Image 1 (tube, rainbow, N blue to C red):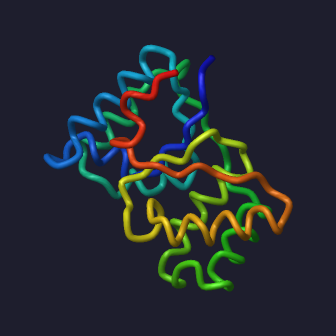
Image 2: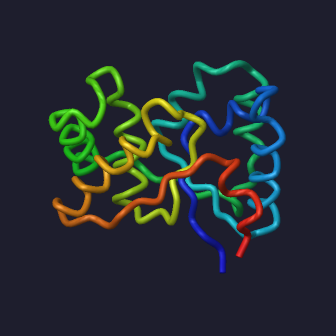
Length: 153
């Protein structure tokens, strides 16, 4: 069964980062093999427009049958604002919160990120999920690609 993983922008950049390249490429192999559907948002697209050319090209070459685009909605923006209002992270991390809210509201199985400060952080994850559950949303699993590799199901 294919799982839906929401990829934030850092995962695409990880393809060309010496520290993250190997694990990121293995994760994209899982996508190509059909284990994982790469879910991304219009926010991801906007952020990638600011990325180096090779990251843009990698993103653009992901085959449509391996990916699903979701759109940031007013509901998502409201949930992201709650994360900020309740100080899970600071105001400058609003886009990170939008990624988390997007994954949550679109029922992704996992949010994947290389952002250890604001996203893949045990204290932040607890905060996001406390709010998610209180607001009537599901718990969101948040992991780095390194944590995912080897768990193909």
